[in-house]
Image 1 (cartoon, rainbow, N blue to C red):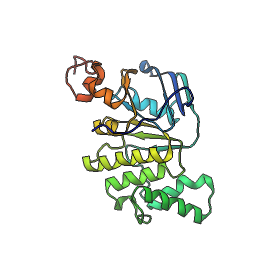
Image 2 (tube, rainbow, N blue to C red):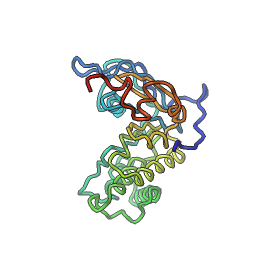
Image 3 (cartoon, helix red, strand yellow):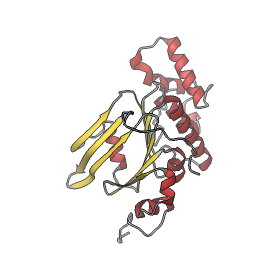
Length: 250
């Protein structure tokens, strides 16, 4: 079901929080990104979708500073960035509380303020009382929610989600998607979610970019995606075998 939500009003008076302009990237002689351009605005979740190898994960790595573009520009108008990884990426030898405390280190808070913030974030994701648990004592959904709490512990203005519902059952996926929507409403952050999951981009995204072969082939809302005649988004949204996303060798 497509999320029923009033999308943020984007006009000339609102400045983007993330700007990606004409970005190219190749690995050796293989081009991966071929002139990708888009903006993300405060209070907006942008869904970045497409089949494996289309370039969406490369864009996310560039935004996270793990890769440099060959050309083009990336501008992020805040250094308060939260990351939610495909795997929860928690430190198993640290408790839930200690995993969140690591993200707070640079603020040099006293213990009372640190504990208050951690308790607030765990309350937000439904994990109050789990402070002293270790990741191995948590379910997959609880680990994912812990990674959400860690990502937002500093109230980021920008959030990147890398396949946040991959490997989760439909019920837990819905819980995670609901948390994404709640965080957007509470933080007014500019968010990008890289995902293959239909429910994730239809339930959380305000706007969707479909990538193929290093380029953006379609842009619109989830509602528009489901009724569009564009062959790329039609094939992706309805998992059709025939269409431009698959070549004849597959």
